[in-house]
Amino acid sequence: MKMESSKSHSIESAKISVNGNIDANYVRQHTLSIHYEDRDATEPLKKSIKHSDHNEVESDRPQKDISWKSAMPQVENRINFNFTPVSRTLYDLLCQILVSCAIYLIVIQAGINMSYSAILLPQLADRGSPIRIDRDEASWIGESNKLISRYNVNSYLMSNEWNFYQLAWWRYSCR
Amino acid sequence: MEFLSASLVTIFLPIGAFIIGPLMDSFGRKRMALVTCVPFFVSWTIVALATNVWHIYLARIVAGISAGFTTVSLIYVAEIAHPQYRPMLLSFNSVFVSFGILLTSVCGLFFDWRTIAVVNGAASVLSFLIILLIPESFLWLLHFKSGRSLEAEKAISRIYTSKVVKCEYERSMQCKVKGDTVKQLSLWVYLRRPKVYKPVLVLIAVFFFQQISGGYVIIFYAINFFLKIGGNFGGQIDEYGAMLLLGVLRFFISLISAS
Image (cartoon, rainbow over all chains, first blue to last red; front, side):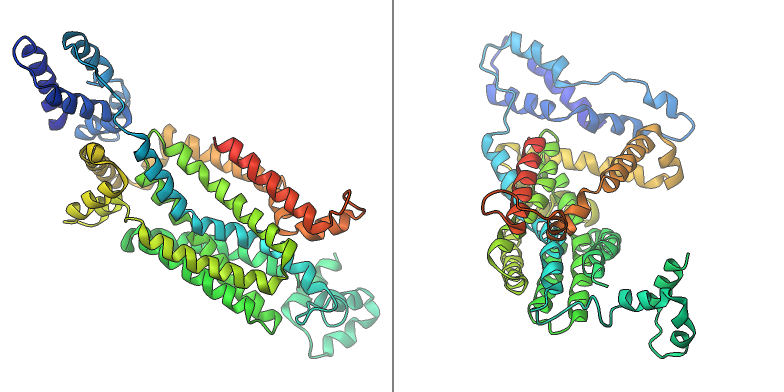
């Protein structure tokens, strides 16, 4: 709130002193700082002063704001100097892209992990592989195929090889 | 049981994503991004030295948790980016995910799984070293740490040119005031607002349809998928070549949709 009012003052004073000497850099600085406050940033500030749950409707009502769009043309018309509203250079953008690319390196790792199983699974299932996920002998899928023939169920229940996954698969396949 | 090594990552990913929130608030975005590289390296080491299927399962659990940790990069980018460039920089996220998928499919063409694990372990060390160079998020320094505004200003000046630093600092301070007012409200009051619950519902719907459309299943089981399709894919292309083509396609489409 305070910040805004001081800025609006600076604009006024800039307008008034146009006829006298005016420091172009001074105006540039202040107009730029106004350019920088976007609507999203200022509106909640105003709201926060009188905000509570009950007057939510009132606070949502559009309020008069001092944005660069309303303030700048006047300054631009009065002072005859080449005004450049975009002070964020390409260098700024480049820096931001570089920094975010650096932090996104860990996201690359996440992507690698997602697709790694696509390569891992068929190679582990391969017969020549040193670590093998057994499909036919001891795997629970194989065991459950035995189970489906009800013939074996009783003898199977008495065996020691019972575990949670086999139980789950058995329940599933008997449905 | 083979499906486990694919789905353990996705099962443990939400756990990592839940843990990282409070951790990055208290320790900082950059530090947690550095920490994220460590479990990735550990998991690749376990895979490279694995002698048993259970080693691989353990590695996949660790990798899943740290894949959840990678949420920190989104928060970091959202905080350092200027509002004008923020959407563009945030959409780079999917580009980099598909770049990782592309990288794996390229590696799959030349190496077996153990060598790929070694390569990826080296990559995680490299990314650790690169992340050391970037500055801490200035918004975090202003919000969560009192009396570190000087440090925050230095962090801003490392990303922005000197002309813009003051404006960015003021913008961050405004965000701070905004954040404080949000904190006072309870979650339920906050959720009742249309501008909160509408985007949440839209996102839930989008992610639901994204998951149910099965794109991720193809990523996880690409080779099996192409083996099941069978036949030849034209010319010299085998399953790994087809996976590479899929990765290239995914990468360029995500690049187009991001820009």
